[in-house]
Image (tube, rainbow, N blue to C red):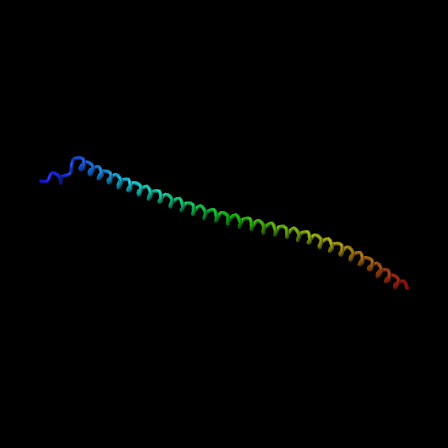
Length: 123
C-alpha cells in the first residue's frame, strides 16, 4: 500500500471535525428554521387577532353611531312635539278668546233682539 495516499491522523481528525461542524450547522439551521416557523405562526395568529379586534371595534363604532343617531332623532321628535304642544296651546287660547268674544257678541245681539221684541210688543 501506498503510505503517502493514506490520510494522516491530523487529516482524519480535521475531516471528522468538519463533519461534526457540518452536522452542528445543519442542526442549527433546522433549529433556526423551526424557530422562524414558530415565530411566523405566532405572528399570523396575532395578526388574525388584530383583524378580529379591528372588526369588533368597527361594529361597536357602528352601534355607537346608530345609538347616537336614534338619540338625535328622538330628541328632534321630542322638540317638535314640544313645539307642537306650544302651537296647540296658542291655538286653544285663540279659540277661547274667539269663543268669549263670540259669546259677548251673541249676548249683546241677544239683548238687542230682546229689546226690539219688547218694544214691538209695547206698540
